Length: 157
Image (cartoon, rainbow, N blue to C red; front, top):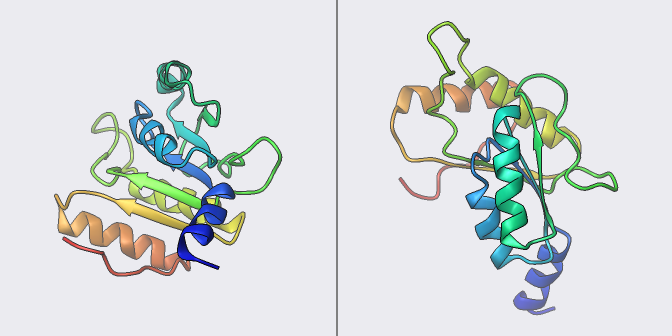
């Protein structure tokens, strides 16, 4: 099987769960590249309606938006028919500490949400971020490792 055929088969079966999707821009950009993949983008309840409107405007029927509070219940299934995500995407989430000084830090619930998402299916997570605070990023890595998640080295810094 050629690499292009193998890649097409993988993308056709790809189910993406994005945590903290914000405006949904990343999901829209990926959907433009991988048209047969399914996407479930999550964020705080107050952000989901704007994200859903952006998805509707994009014209991609494979994009769905739903609320998710990190650290609570397991993330929703990535598609309507069951089965977890094959890719859990975290894009630039490690800097978010909470809405106020009185809210708990978000790293612990984020790591737990990643663990729960990966437990639903044999899958992997891709965590992309700009290096801003090496101690904070190392702490997130340690939280994930403490939950039994295997961590690969960064592709680049």
